[in-house]
Length: 187
Length: 347
Ligand code: SF4
Ligand code: SF4
Image (cartoon, rainbow over all chains, first blue to last red; front, side):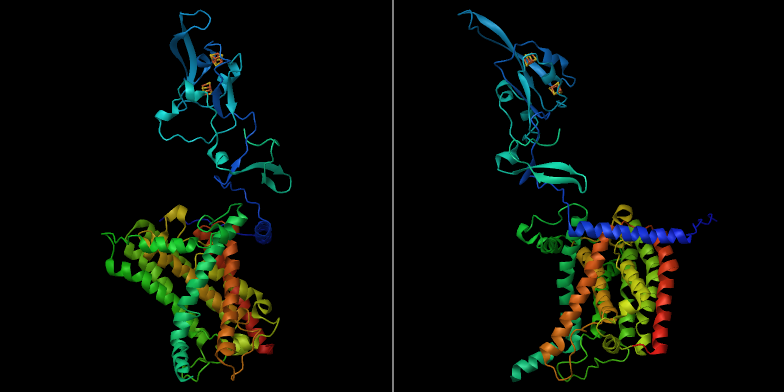
């Protein structure tokens, strides 16, 4: 025979505190019902306005790059690779020169930002966007040309409303409309 | 005048009108669809979400329920090999019918528009309504049993545990309103309540017990135990799909609606701001009181829906503990108060 389950006796103060707890729960529920604080992000219609320093997608400024290879070396995920090609040297007419520039594979990138930090000439920088869509995996391996194009958030392109979440001491996290230049949240 | 009056007489014939139009099936569907939307919106509001929205942003997603209905009705209705076919198909339909039946005996007005021989002023309509209300859970258990699936069986077993707990509470709590007026007639119970002297205020223990019983019987939070998603998928309804699933889920809400109508009648003085006299016509004598009762019932349902947003779910043993140790004594106290009122002749 299975052992009889032990039933906990509920003393009176336990009962009263349960009544109190129920009333408190109902009051809080009613408070939120009358004064809702919705934090849902209606994504394509609204998007989170990210701060300039946000570690989002990475763009290369080819003109600043000195081909030092540091970014490819430091990348912990082996997402950054150098591509090499021969091209005419502008300083020595008629001669060819070996160029190498970084390209990125977003299938591997973990957005750690090491490459941006290590770059001695600030040729790499983060873009405050994190919701770029690729149609297939092959597209996520950028070539040199596409690595220089700044990716844009589709919600921003389609005219969504920029919002940010701020902390309100009374109401917790509150979603408000982000004004131009007023910074953003996230990061 | 002749034709209209004949058609009207047929239309308002109580066995048809009360069962099929209002407070029966049609009114039930309209109000249940509204309440389902309200429930989802309320839960979302309280829980910092948005709820149904995208289907019709202007209306706050009100058409979502219509969309759901359409989706359910076009979904394939699969009958698995292992089920007991006859019972499996019959259970949801019988459940729906049994759920609406009590509407036929609940008077919505003290007077009837035409001189029917239908005894609207039936002496025992409260008892009849309570008795008819107890039929439908049998089919929930039958659905679980016929499904031949472990989740369905567990859900059905839980449901049967709950039935034994809530039936008694609801019946005692509602009968507590019959004692003061020395009658099982809903019309007399309603007529006895005046302005602020409604039964819910005069007899709060009975009202609270009845409310808990309604929550338990219709799987409202915090008693959504037979169908609790996280534990037993959809309980007795696990094997059902398509329209049949919709019917079963709807039946629980229709039952809540019918119980709310009954509570609006006996606890909240039914049609009371209005006072139809025998000479009144169809609209002021019959339809207007009906609308008042339905509005009160909708408000009760809305309050019950609000609870969903606040409460979690009890375990089965906690729910039964609450039912037997708290709600049943409450109902008995309520009944004692009712008897006292009856003895003193308060109403
Ligand atoms: S962000 Fe990190 S993972 Fe991505 S390419 Fe730069 S170093 Fe590599
Ligand atoms: S670290 Fe900067 S400068 Fe060096 S190769 Fe990479 S991008 Fe070019």
